[in-house]
Image (cartoon, rainbow, N blue to C red; front, side, top):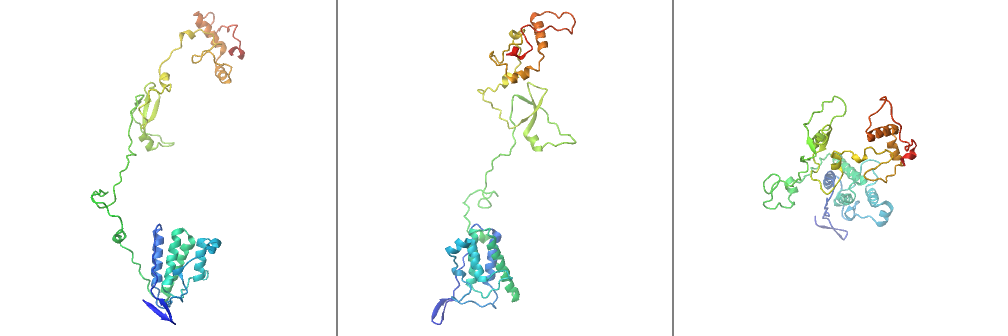
Length: 335
């Protein structure tokens, strides 16, 4: 537009450059700001164009003071300045008194602070209210809304980094599509072999009531039984590690082997015990007493005496021999 001269003053009529910088903004909010900028830049000609230095709106040099930030907070200070320029919105839509680049500069102000606070409801409402007021200006003057020309897909990606020559992509062709990303085969079910178990054929769940088995559980488990205990069925995890450190003795091998009572213990009176190869076990503990209380002491000693002497039972089959004199029914005999 150039320069002009009013009463000896020289002023620049060229509109200030409004540059929007969208970094991490929601695409929908970005579109709203673009639409508002387009509307304010093309308001009907019935609105007067403000002369430089005499404009009502001064958003080209918008600023808020440190005192305002301290009193209202940064977003609150911006809201206060917008209310000073446009008035409160309690009485209805905003009525623009003029048009021009200084008014369009409000979009740059909103963009700047929305980048800092993208979820600010106050600033987003200003965007909506200013857009509604601009649309009202077009409808009041029976003017059509200007269309917003959106960038094409090709131009939107024109600044993207070029794909290196010969790079393989998802489409299988060099230079097209997205780059291939090698996925880990972490969802492949694989079976492991465990020599302690023998697998059994799978059976379907034909129950008509109760909880149903999850299909995933059937895929990651295997119906089986221990080779040492064929009568008991188990379900083992197919991902169980089959390699076991031979240096680790967990006692399972000893428990799986058959064991017989030491012949030397046969016939020994039951008021003395040898547990785990030790003869210094304190039998006065309440835990052992509870276990031993489940056994009929009289019957135990009668059977022991009969076994140790290898004598046939005499008299009636219901008769039992009394316990040895050294054995008392009192708990002191176990200590």
